[in-house]
Length: 315
Image (cartoon, rainbow, N blue to C red; front, side, top):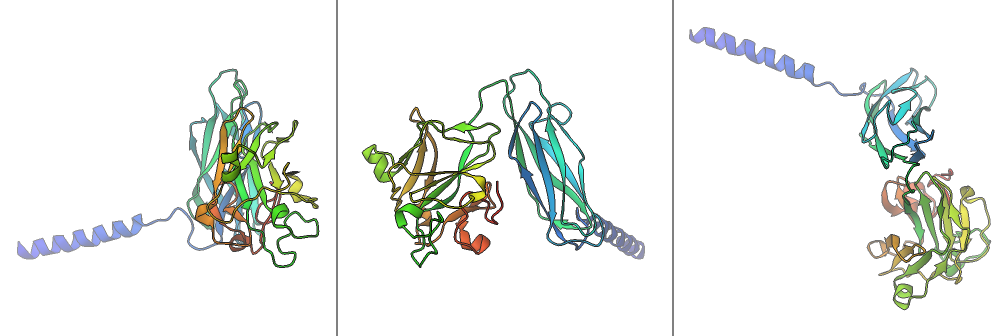
């Protein structure tokens, strides 16, 4: 009996070990290029709005890479939206491919619904977990303002023209400061009468900038507010304005920036204090739109990118 017990224990151990080995199966093929997902735009209207979900490889592959998507969130497929395919096939030799998500219109006032998009599996590559959120805005109710500061330059470099962020051919601490504001919503935001303050200006109730009537940010696009000067360049076709006072006077330490709407409600703010290290460059979200703020040169090797993503491409 003792020998029989030992034999049974050995068989159990062998079987159990084999089962554990079989169960260790990753969601992607071992090796291969890394896959990342991007979404454009971040919000769409329910009356036929569309968004592209793009899978991009870190390097091209000699075979097709198939990226399977997992969709969730408060929006229901087939009821709130349709997607052209739940898999993205990236052909051999290519770096990216996309599928299209299209909103389905209805007359119900059911507010904004969200599609949560993740990678569930990759054949021919590997991935790190990501979560993208697409907002489907109800066109039967008033639009919800969705603005963020995406990049802030409060300390332009004073080395030659390194700090010439507005591209007018001269360096000016006051004029080359800028705020990059992104509209993540599916509808334009009218900024008429909106105001920008820093701490000192807010205490004195004297805004650094008042947006003129008719100023707006298109959906999914950026607006750049420079301190002054004559901004020169395409800036990713962003809306470009200069401060109404000619000086936003952003301090390198212990300051905050505030954006208030026309009725005096705070919309967004940016706290300079945690980032007060005299960077001589901008702070930008990494990745754009969704990430935390980092010094720009760490992200892309350049000092700023007003109106564009960190790699210079337009929003």
